[in-house]
Amino acid sequence: MHVLHSLPKFNNPDVIVGVETSDDAGVFRLRNDLAIVNTVDFFTPIVDDPYTFGQIAAVNALSDVYAMGGEPKTALNIVCFPKGKMDIKVLGEILKGGGEKAREAGVAVVGGHSIIDDEIKYGMAITGVIHPDRILRNVGVQEGDALVLTKALGTGIISTALKKGKASKESVQAAIASMLTLNNTAAKVMRSYPVHACSDITGYGLLGHSLEMAAGSSVTLILESSKLPLLHRAPRMAEKGYLTGGCKRNREYLKDKITVDESIREGLVEVAFDPQTSGGLLIALPQRSAPKLVDELQANGLKAAATIGYATSLQKTWVRLV
Image 1: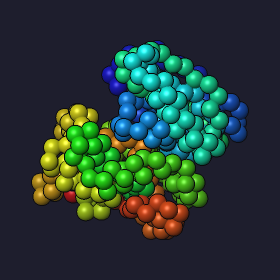
Image 2 (image 1 turned 180 degrees about the vertical axis):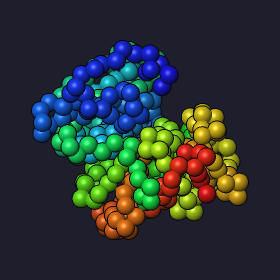
Image 3 (image 1 turned 90 degrees about the vertical axis):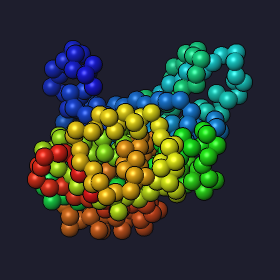
Image 4 (image 1 turned 120 degrees about the vertical axis):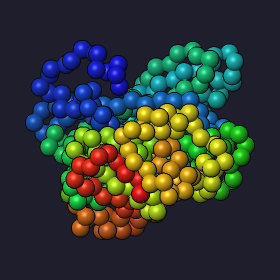
């Protein structure tokens, strides 16, 4: 983030959302009724199966467009692969998985770029469309808003336990199923509600992305630990030490910016810090609309959807986990 502040500023009146904020994607106006949404994401494998990895990476990359309220249209593959050190069929499976998920989302893969690297990395650059007046930002939360989360938490913890051979079959299956779920249904459902702000929960974890929303909106977000939707045994695995490096970095960065109630079980706290891959949407909307939104999300297959907190006037810290 500090590096971004030193980059050249682009004072183009058609840049509606740029790098100056912590939004999920950039938005550029083409005409009064049409803008494009641009985002990119790629990472190293978090599961053993290359096809599943490709699927997860694609779903994760598409998520930022959904969080902005947009509709993804095209994708470009981004590939790093150790040529000559691994069967090229592995790459084929990764690309196949990504392509299948893009097709499920109604997105056309129109090309890409690859380089030789010692470590596999894969993801996509996504272009979507949106009406300039219907953009959802991760700022704009209003005092009294309810906070709705559309997916369960704990993918980073479970992925770490999997790498060490310590994750149960049930936990792995639950995490993979969650990561393979596109946020298109959640995005479609929320468009019919008076949403004030939205973000997808990814590398900064629930607490980090909540901080961005709170600081950008000048409110304090109260997150209720007892209401967090959790992946199977994620808190228990966290308490056994299966934490990502990102989780520890999130905790260090956030230590003086948030408040965590000392009575909360340590595993729950770690889940709230845990970096998510292909996480859900965090939606801020009027309290009166939240129960109906949750009911509709669950009726459309998003069984983990839940109201997890609310916004208050600005207090001593941006976010409180209670």
